[in-house]
Image 1 (tube, rainbow, N blue to C red):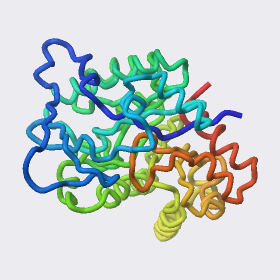
Image 2 (cartoon, helix red, strand yellow):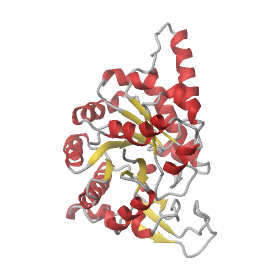
Image 3 (cartoon, rainbow, N blue to C red):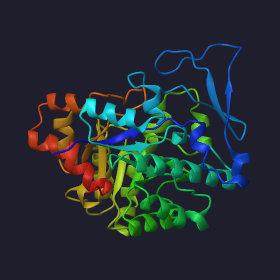
Image 4 (tube, helix red, strand yellow):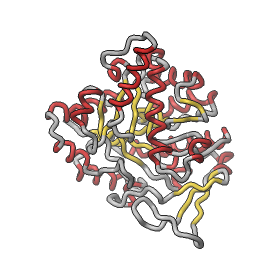
Length: 348
């Protein structure tokens, strides 16, 4: 048995954009440092100083930094340091997600493509140094449909094991037919759709600017799960796997109960095993009532992540130790930490 961390992160640095082509360098994000004004605290309680500037929008750079990791490890300045820390934690494989892109970043299609292209090549280089232990989820340039196939094919050939989406994208519901070509491509490439806690809608994100990430980020993903099943999108792409990452799993019973009632009222047959029947997987957290959740979601549909590199309510670097204290059968634990994420991400 191995341990697969289904949700770990990289924190972007100027090196992330070093893979931009020469004619795209005008799109390189700036970093500005606050020197005056009121103090803003990071999630860990430190004073936040640095910000990314993209399209004249300010995005916190050092807001969500897990201080239980070293700078060189979480920023991938040293892949060896990251692997060494994984050894200490008993983690065999990590699946890497972005940090900056958990929010909406770029409206301009050229800028979006330049950022995604450079990020994907940065992760490809990390994968090459990671001896198969650092897999990653690719950024799709949604506003450049004509370049989407080549970019996702590059990602697939260079260690990517999924395609990154947020709960809302391009001011659209995730069940919108606009995304069908992406879903068809993901199914063809055998890359799962990985909906991570986040929000790609400028309107929705900014409306909840002063709210917590729960409303901005997490509820958007829960809503995406509901919309996909209500509209029958997984049945259109029967081989495609769908993941819902860093939103815990405690909500699954509520959403399934609501959907089953809606189906009943409309005279539609509900699934016996809604997640399994639709190739859906959810990353649980050790704060979930896992015995109850397993009974609703099924023991073959849950995974576990540490949120490595971040400091927020989902972060638990000792998650793989703590899950063994939840009273689950060893067989179920082994599925959650090894078998299920391997199946979902297509890991060999």
